[in-house]
Image (cartoon, rainbow, N blue to C red; front, side):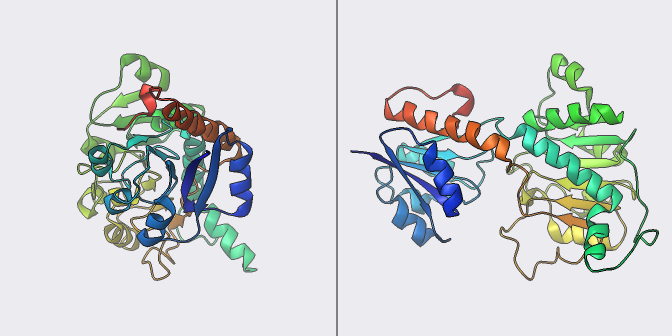
Amino acid sequence: MAEKIVVVDMLSETSAARLRALLPEGFVLTHGTKRGDDHLKEILADADYAISGQLGVTGDVLRVANKLKLLHKWGVGVDNLDIEAARELGIKVARTTGSNAVSVAEFTLGLILATLRHIAFGHLHLQRGEWRGGRLPRDNFMLSKKTVGLVGFGAIGQTVAKLLAGFGCTILYTQRNRASTEIEAATGGRFVALPELLGTSDVVCLHCPLTPQTENMIDFAALATMKRTAILINVARGGVVVEADLVRALREGVIHAAGMDVFSVEPLPADSILYGLDNLVITPHIAAMTADSFAPTVKRMFANIQAVSRGEPLPPGDVVV
């Protein structure tokens, strides 16, 4: 009898067909059709394996998934998965560490340039038939030769550092533990404490996980230590930034501008305070989404599912629980 894989996120029929085309023999795949725990409980009740992209999975949901052997993150961040409940229930948890590093790093670079150079602003107004050349809301800045601070220096942060080498940027980074001298030599990164990074960087990029230590880390007090000409880029998790404080800082000119691909509530509500700011570029959590990385990442997840099905260990780098 075929084992059942459920993608908890809502998928288009096109995306579902692409997944099924890569599905190993002996498995069937279905997916969510709406949001909410009641729906997840229904579709996971007889699932052997679950895959979560951006949708969270709570302990209440896991407790009714009586057959579930593995909860697999399609990506890296597992802050929206109840890891403790999975451990308690004996459900393995895995992720595709490093699979989206290049995709997110390239997107970070694009978001930096869009924010520094008013690309989104110019596009929006020209689409409305308004020629705003020479009438921008504030100064444009080049990226070349700037100091870029990376908060989090894992696979994504290191890839961003390497991409910035061509711009002649000075790279600062901070994280819980200093990287090896080999990594620092390969990336040009210099380890500093967070206060120094915030105070000296022209561009601050967030690449850290959402943890009790990083939640609400970038509040108004932190933003007030940044240069007034600096920009903030968040491609990490929405909860790292206090969004109301960021809006205040942008409106009051405490920092120059910001770019965000992640938010504390997703999808971004229609009444969000983040809409309508001409010095804020926002995108709908798409940094990791590239056609180039789709098949390799899906094959890696399916290989991990097959390993669990055969009773084999998962690659150590992919194991969460």
